[in-house]
Image 1 (cartoon, rainbow, N blue to C red):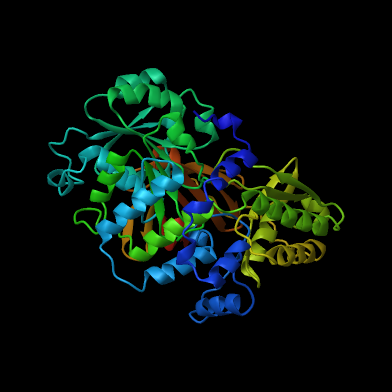
Image 2: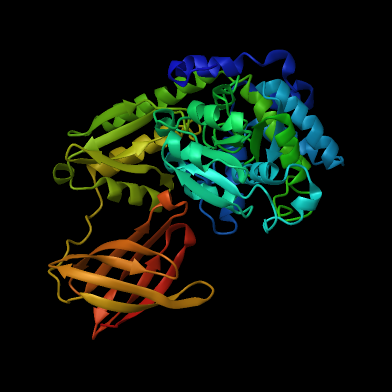
Length: 531
């Protein structure tokens, strides 16, 4: 069994690289693609400019991604081998069941798992895995999902440490989620109705009383499969989670593995992975919409083929060299300090650079720098950070292309030496907003009058609650002059997440303004006193 605490960056990545050689699909690639693959190059020059022109032609601004493998930022860039495989796959017809079988067997050879499946993203892999544990490969049951009336397997156990927004992919099958916190609660929760135990991989799981090994020790003798969500992790070979006793593990294809952004991997027990294919498109039923084309299937397979051949140590060294370059440049600004932070765990396994300074001394905050770089040209996405009374930004090199480090360093030095004007300071409150407010929200499509704000004001600070259609969440905010900013958060420990920021003005017993709902985009709102 592989021990997580014994896995250094070097031996994790070397264990993957050692599987390559004879297993590679080199004949599928043109000599030009193989040459580009040798350096794991990202298109630059004319090719890169052409790619940018495609987006700019429709009014979309490309960006330099120094933030990470976030889906909203379109994940990672596919490797040249993957693009070549997708192009070649698009030129012929195949039978998708035959393709799934061949790809599954090849993934098994490459990853040392029993079988593999390409899904339309990691979330779809979680959904198919859940359906497989609920209904096996039985089409009479499959066509009833998500109505589980009369089914035996109707519950999924999720430890409290693994509750997260992505479990919607699990509950979409129609199962009831049962939360547990201890081994005793896990043992008591398992019964004939239990379809599986779901785990979100990460350091807090590894350090928990209910880590994967413990969960497997409890669940497997009772015939309950264990599914691990390792979406953002590097691919370990042999697989660390299967080594801990899990039956299934799912990955995002468009993050560390650098396959198609619309693809994912499901690896593990052959019977369950094959059943997961039954519950996926092109087969009919609830999951018909989770379609994987021949192009994504072969592109994802090529990404895994390439993963086992990539020089991961050289990639890591290149990331660190980029961070050192940026650190040297920004350190020329008096008062700026830098620190390279090494990753913990397998998710988003990359070093990062923290750049810190005293806001009062340089006259600019990390948030202002972050926002300015994102709004300017070239557009750069990075993270805000801070600590020890200092403000700053952090840079993740994972998704950078060669040359991006020079652009980032130059822009940071420019902003830190000649910062933009600071935001207007807050004004003394000119209004009182304490009390109950009835809120109307106008969404992009539709509206709601079900929302209520219960506010308490003390000077410029506001606290209270925000009640929506079904949930109530805590609220905090501020008043500046006649302007209010109120934020409520429903955290993902509930298995979902909502983040509402109300910004507006107060006049004559009414409030109105804009509403930012994060991933659910923007809306407008009005409020009137209800008490």
